Image 1 (cartoon, rainbow, N blue to C red):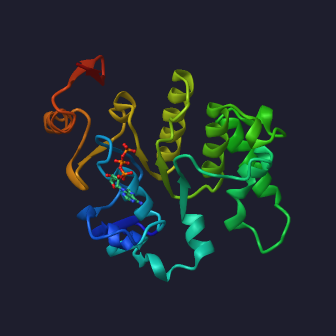
Image 2: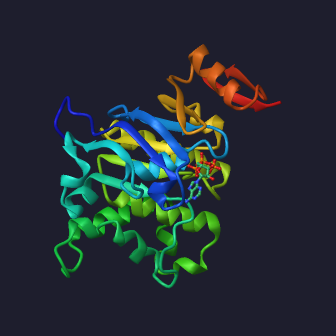
Length: 261
Ligand SMILES: Nc1ncnc2c1ncn2[C@@H]1O[C@H](COP(=O)(O)OP(=O)(O)OP(=O)(O)O)[C@@H](O)[C@H]1O
């Protein structure tokens, strides 16, 4: 990564249903977005706010209007394999060949690093083992993905995203199916990635986890309504507004927590 150049920069990015061949309704109104370097950004907002659409557009999975640059270079100008080394993606309800072993699934994260048809290198195997150890999924490495529980499967898919070792990590509802201890482990993994210089962007419904991010992006109606730190009164006000004033945000020790009311 070149210093001073944003890892990802979306300018005037918008998306209408006709770009999905469905009409002309705007799903994302023109917005600018650039994840803070070496930081964790959490995107939050009510159902249908456009969070997943934004994240999917940011990693090139949806057609959009506007500009998207990865490390200062237009998204479309990147060779696909090179780009895949720069951006790791964990989607919602991803379909993956269920008969593959957990190890094989995580190794898919190394494909952008491998020469065509070449066997995995020692470096690939180390990256996979590290990622599976981090998500505590190593012990079921030989089990087929389709024979894992929802939370176990999610930890394998998280390991696949980590195994890419990309400077930008985009995750859509990464905590789905994770129990509270594994949610805390996820936060720890994100902090380690950020300490190593990565930018992490996650869409989260778990506000108490999102309030531990460095930056919150609050969305509603296909727009970004607010960006700010979790301790800022303006961030609390934006959260309360988009969630119909049905939240109380309290400080507990050094942390902020949201209570449903
Ligand atoms: N392919 C599609 N066809 C029709 N409408 C769509 C499509 N994709 C998204 N939408 C609509 O766009 C809006 C934003 O959807 P999106 O999935 O981005 O919301 P979200 O903030 O991630 O919601 P949630 O919290 O419920 O997951 C919603 O109203 C959704 O119904």
